[in-house]
Image 1 (cartoon, rainbow, N blue to C red):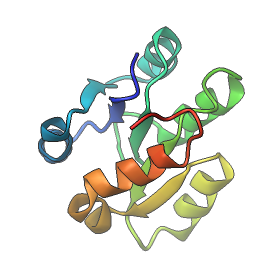
Image 2: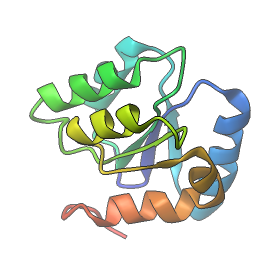
Image 3: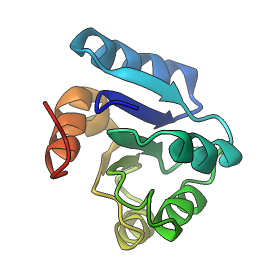
Length: 129
């Protein structure tokens, strides 16, 4: 996979559409992650430039997804951009402990999607622009 592919683990279709609309015009390719099993199988099939995780998603356990990535030496280098409700202090703390590159509020994520993705990718030494 190239450095323009972003895995998106967001089941809310309206929020996914906002992400798509923010990234596709800038040359990014999105690969949607819909189930827990897809986290490891899709990431193992090709290294994405980054992963976007909704920490409040009821369909996919974001913490389990982070644990799966962290447990695999090949996958733990995938930078992860997460978003969560700003008042959930424990969610933010645990996400950081599990290696999230950046976590922001839903509002900030919605307003600055492309900039945040590029910031997270930019922190990776192997990223190409």
